[in-house]
Length: 211
Image (cartoon, rainbow, N blue to C red; front, side, top):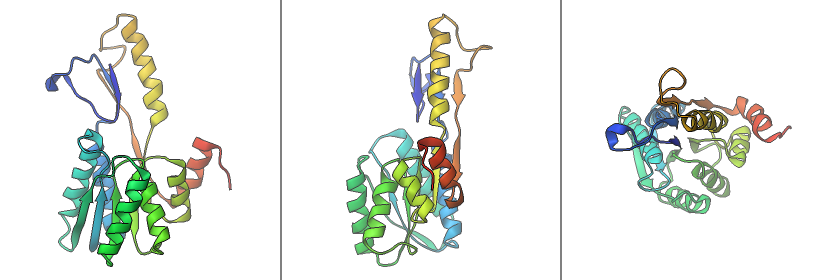
């Protein structure tokens, strides 16, 4: 079986029995970017940090972001860069974007590392409140930046359920059961877009961190 952030199904030539995880990465990227565009009133320059070249989940989120931005005539993509899942690379790339585009108004971050790097760079460059950041997942530092208003929105995957359901399905496979009534071939997990007012509750739930 396979699990996590992207599914290679039987029609793709994969021999897996079942999959548990996120099969809606394109939609996640699109929803985050729509939130960003609405925050910017449909006007401005936006940079995209993708993550790892060829990683299906990162590429799908980036594609969703690009397709949404294309729907807004007064929005422009300033650039698309890959940071290789490195916080430091994301930080440096964001600083370069900020230097090259004084009017940069937003950044879409397509993995778990780059919201942290982007937020660090925005703070270092004194651009908090001028650049809107949206990104993926529940890194503790990213949630703190969300709580402080440096990041505008995060798409948080239900990683607990991904882990729990993966073990449940794996045990059934080990017992010789095939997909059907006892478990589905695909177990779809959720992503929730959260904002500043929900950050503290998420920090407490995931990390026991209280104000």
